[in-house]
Length: 220
Image (cartoon, rainbow, N blue to C red; front, side, top):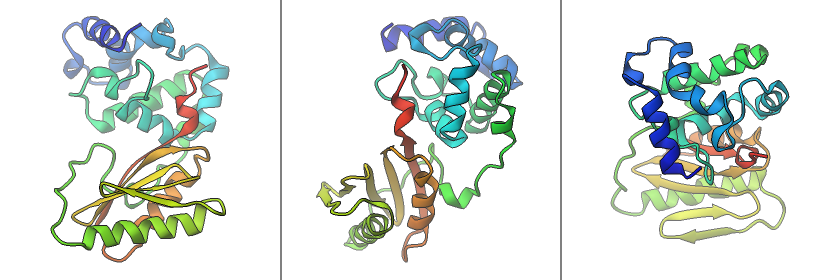
């Protein structure tokens, strides 16, 4: 199903709209069930417990990012196409879905400190700072991440203010001291480690963590 058609279908299914829903269960019913009950657009069915067990194993934060930002190359758009939903409510719906799919243990795990994820996936980014400070911060973050987590021989490619750490799949950009991290990582456990490492670099005033687990792109 084309992405636009799926978004229209979801909007029509919502009726009065998600703003009227007050609970995660109601939001799921009004905005998510159309696809996740039926499997439309290759969405994982809520009743497929084996599938959700595999997804929960990738890390709850990866599922949050997929729900908040969308999953590239799939019909899953940011917040399912309902941008009025708050980030916290979207996360609560993910928790509801995990619990409903028999993955209550994943919901029980404590969320990492806010500092690890910085400003969060929906943060509004400042304009680039004048001068070379942002460039220097990007270089320092990329160098530290490469040294700590990239495979031997990994290179740093710089283009238009963005540094890509080859072999790791991480992109680093800095705007007015706020480091933006993006990319799909093969090893999901590195996502929060890299965000914390970036936050420790001198001159960094915040971290926007847009990295996701590469397994989130596998919809088989």
